[in-house]
Length: 573
Image (tube, rainbow, N blue to C red; front, side, top):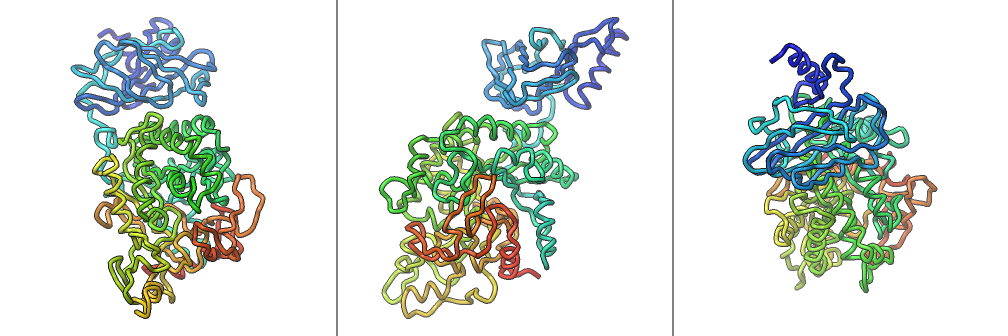
């Protein structure tokens, strides 16, 4: 190899960094500075029939308002999916065009995208790349071939349970709020979910950390071990059609904005190779798909807006799009929201909800392989395990199912529901190794009101009401519930089929305002957050049980947090 070629390769190594393969046109006497562009094409993970690759383009010429990268394969490689670029292939020729959010490419600037492909035989690196028709690379035969070790978290080797053997990210903003409360330091180090509940949250809104800031902090917390960071994907068009308190910014028909302004930018950030070592858990669109089953049609619980969302299909399309795009990122683990036992546990809800989840998981290019599992009880209060009675008990000649509280539900608590619903989901066509998460952030129901045994056997209602831990007026109550407490602390693999107990809803963040409060976040006033409200068919016309003086959803609610600590079960030490 000539001295000139050796120097050139050394210069390219500086561009590419410690790993991967960078390519550039040999500049000859003009020097490396004359290279119009460089391309780093890195095979991140490879198995017997497929691979994933990351591509970084660095532009050394005039700034661009759009870009088009082309290359051809010598073998039979086929691009099957991609992220952060519009990828197409004709024969051996591949074209990668910018997305709307990464079209600008400044002089000296870089842009990255990735893709998954299939192959058989060899998987040689492309010999030539052109950027807008200008050649900017030649193959130097460097690393990236079949002998490269796979990256952890790639499509072929995602771990079965991302929480096993890993720390979980502690949101410093939530931690500071918790620590500022009397006694809050006892739980301020617990991991909680980060809610991306509007487009502005991606870059940070209202002085709060954005997605990249949380990921950078997660890398700092990770150290040399494994770390899970949890995000709630929550901004569907026509969001939460049955509850005004969590309505969002996107109108019912704005599925295009959801895709291009919300999901695409989130994916672009999550797919950054900088974050490839993190295990990223997403909770996908809580309180959406079950609404299409329980709150539509001729049911007494029907809400007109839910009929609109069922008719236009945008919940199904939006969830499918999110699963498809986020599922392309090798270290992302998608968990779809599956309601809770007091919502889905009845026979006419149970099977149909699993069916519509399968429909969403195969919409907009998604497949069941994009779903790692499901989460129940997100931001809800259903007790983890009721120990003082069983679904099979009979009192005064009546089944527990006939009590006003159970009301013919087949499940008494979240653990039994989550385990049973997992089986139903597998029967509906999801992979047999899916795992469940249960949000235990506010379902402890401890304190002085916690029963120590079953109630009196005078009637089935005295028996159930006297023994149940969950002290709500009705299992349909969801807003800032009075008497609730912190539940089981986050932990991995606590029970069969359960990947983890998590605090996906950060304790102390309000479910909704107890009176109308104008706000720029698109969040309305729902009477279920008003402590004087006497209910509707969705909670069998019971009192709301909500705490007074609550702020809008997502904002810190000091009084609620103090009550959650007071009623924690297991108790705080």
